[in-house]
Image 1 (tube, rainbow, N blue to C red):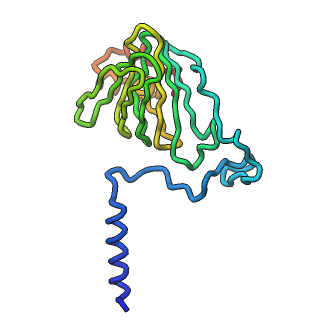
Image 2: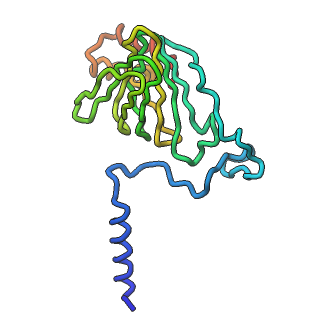
Length: 216
């Protein structure tokens, strides 16, 4: 019989050979059941499968664009609106752009995004941690990936409406929009003036513009 320490060492080596550590260790936990639609009584329990129907696994809320603000509409599909996604480690967003509309620079701290162009021409890109920009115009049928946590952006550069479907590898990717985070969150004005070389009046103008905007 092998010594206990030898057995433990072999198990340790086997685990890290078959499951090498990832550079980014944070992610949604693996599910321990097929699905878990939260109970209406407590979110810590799942509904009994006998009470579920196929309709519980279908969501029809992104057949059409949502409400537009500044020529842009974003409709998230998370476990909050589609409970069947709970514990499955994924979510979606439908983004629609009127001509000239933009999805402002933002990032998702907990997810990589895969963006599929449904229609139109979209200038799309991201900036890596070396401040290198990867951007180009993508069209209907093209797919672009935005790595987790990197700043990315989109703009409709065509002469007709554009639409993009984004998929995330987290049921709660989070979204930090830079204009709102910087000028709508209450950061000290003197700090903002020094950081961006702006005057007091310019800071107030930006705070007034972005202070009331909401995230996707």
